[in-house]
Image 1 (cartoon, rainbow, N blue to C red):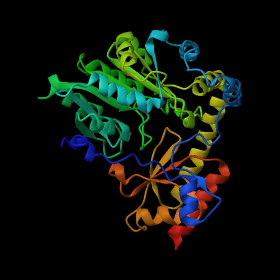
Image 2 (image 1 turned 180 degrees about the horizontal axis):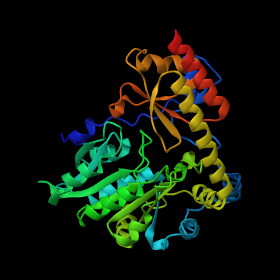
Image 3 (image 1 turned 180 degrees about the vertical axis):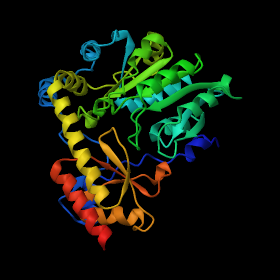
Image 4 (image 1 turned 60 degrees about the vertical axis):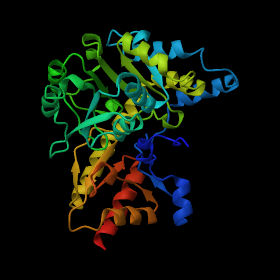
Length: 374
């Protein structure tokens, strides 16, 4: 009998999202939970996005074709500082789908993906799902991208087989970012045949003068892709919509392989409404910055080190004299607070905490203080 699946499928582990409210309630019997585990926007979606969805309800019996061109045009309008047009845009069922598509379409069996580690888990997962090869460069001791080392690897013995490179900026799960000068140098030195993907899922949260989007490089260097998502600052994680900005040749290749009707009509309408609401984006940015500072101060007061973050989350590192990571996470759960352990990123003594509302953040800090004192 033929095997049910190829061997590499058995080596995969199903993606494990952060614990849901339902799971937490069933496991611990607590009704009042605060979820600080999945980097969602605690302010929720824009009211304009919600209103746009309501208008679309009566059309859900039809396949979602009519509004795609308008969504693409609205994305180009949102990025009006760059000379992109709808031919540069590919919509995805979240940026996760686009990551999968990029690996499926661009990486052949004898070609290699270059990745940093730890970085967003889905790059590695996409490689494993498609049974492709991956090279990784460790982050620096400060948990930042070592772009110089990645350039060295790109010019080393495997240079001819290197095809696809991912850079998460800001990086998940660390929150660290790569400056514009560093990205520019990286782009200039990487071999021209390599497709460089800059994942900017958290870019709207960055409040650094030396940070800039890599969209300009899409126009200067055809083998460049920038990924964006509506899941983070736009607060539409549950609708699953993201987009890629790339050269029309790459876009055309992805369109040939992506699922038909891959982005639903409610997500498309909500995305248009969200892009129109610049006030909501700005309010989310400012809230995140204020609360990020408070979280830093609170963790410092508990003698907990953190990695400086430009996202909507903090990566905290437990000291050796503190309880085991899983015990801290469980004790927080018992007090109704869901956070994310990152042992699967080879960071066994670290915990990622999403920035929540002021009262949620204070509840987290108070609970953590009680846990560490005991």
